[in-house]
Amino acid sequence: MSKIRTTVSHPEGYQGLPWYEIRDGKIYTTVSHPKGYQGLPWYEIRGNKIYTTVNHPDGYQGLPWFEIKGNKIYTTVSHPDGYQGLPWYEIV
Image 1 (cartoon, rainbow, N blue to C red):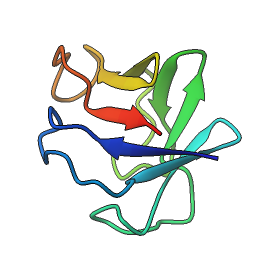
Image 2: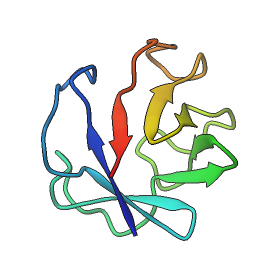
Image 3: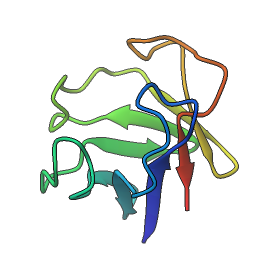
Image 4: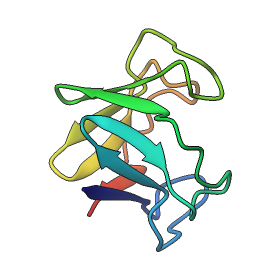
């Protein structure tokens, strides 16, 4: 099981503790996430793209919000904040 933590380029900055964990191609919040552990996956990984699920607070959006490049996660143009150019998350 991989963990995901914020990077210094995330709007909230580097937080140290992982906010998410990856299990079976789904991404779940952890107890370290600002909204806590939610129990149901917020995101789904398809290839190198990350999509919201119906469990996400904003619901399923249909377009990828994030893209995985190596062990870094970047926003896409479909993300509400748009493409930012620097990674927001790191897979550890």
